[in-house]
Length: 96
Image 1 (cartoon, rainbow, N blue to C red):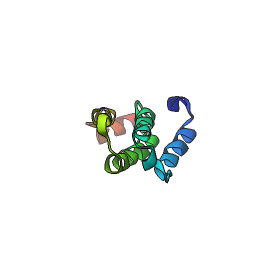
Image 2 (tube, rainbow, N blue to C red):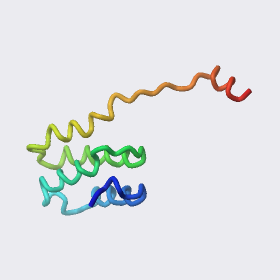
Image 3 (cartoon, helix red, strand yellow):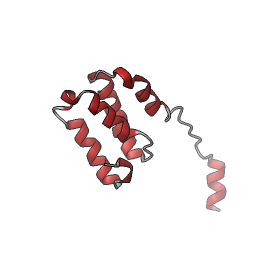
Image 4 (cartoon, one colour):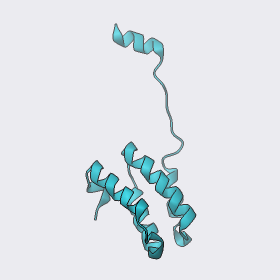
């Protein structure tokens, strides 16, 4: 299944399902690999919030083994976050 091709709603449901999967730890490395594939390149902020929560769960509850560098690369590409708020002066000019 190509996660990137799913609609946002479907992707969101898929990620929530992964969070709630009771037997996820039994899957071990297969689960971690699937999670990395699902999160890699995600751009929708609504999904990223859930994906970062999943990352914390995966890091604390699964043996990462060979996936340590992969999980770092998948998560670290979103940082640092640059945010430049629009100045009040600019907003006043736009509304004129």
